[in-house]
Length: 426
Image 1 (cartoon, rainbow, N blue to C red):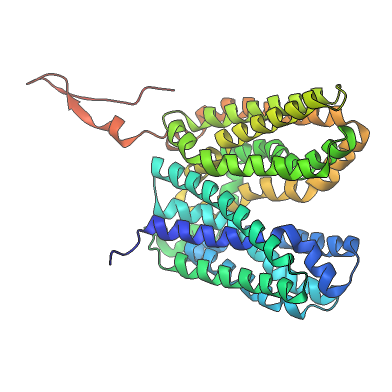
Image 2: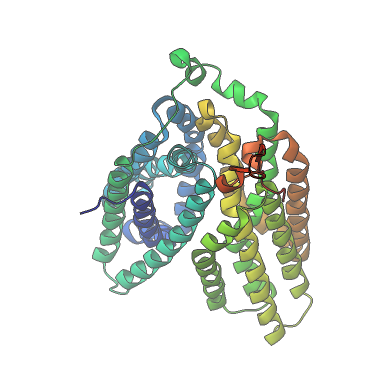
């Protein structure tokens, strides 16, 4: 029997991971409220506190990736989270909850830089873009399946259903770790004596101004990504008088759209510069935010409902253009010797906005809903312009995919000189 390919095993691991996450994410607050009886607000504070403390795992993960390799950190993070979930059934109070949630949070925070580094170690060139696109697509599908499984389990309305879910999530993480562990990497040899990995690594990141600029430019975009889960539900129900059920439908539109279209869209985008695909994606985000802002001027009705779906579709298109392309650009822009540290720093541009978004976006909504949308649109537009200006300062391999077929040499004419055929600039 033929052994599954490295990429097939990788994608199987991502599907198992995402399915488990999809089972738990929708009921994280409900689970602890059910098993401890603590108020939802107190549980929220505990989870946020663990997330803030968990931010320290980003720089630590960067050091570990450069020292031991991304695969080791990915597998270790999975096992750490599995151990935490195995302890969930024993939570009986606030302090125990914090101590149990913390290792799960540390594993969650270390995952993005580790998995991006791991992808960079197992595939190269346009294959990296395609694998990241497939990952986004299948992870969205896995999250959806996990949510359905969680709903079916909770329909039983018993304590056993809650415990079954967390145990299955733990089993999923162990399974994903086992799959990733079997994938060989072609990680480059470390610098002589390992000095770059052990000393001065983050000083090298600090001196890499183009990469730091790319990181800072991602902050407004990261806030933009959060509107679907933070701003839109409040805006729809309180400003547009829409039903609560519409929130779930729009989330499904986005999730299914990414699952079905990310791979073909990214395959098409490999013919263009990554920076320009990213910039186009953020401009489409800006368009969707302006569309949402305009809807507030109309009375609720069919026109607003159609407009909400159109704006959500535009947001999904922006995510299709930006998401996988941005991940590939950053992975290529990070120097191999300190890739873990570079990606850990970049991940802060996602982690910090994710932590702050609930407070910041709801505060802006309370002041002016239209103002919030227009501010977000201005922010992502500034990011697009900044990325375009930064293009010349980034490594050429990061900006251009340079398909292999386009770099082959062909004879100009029989008996004549051989001319290199270069890709047409996009």
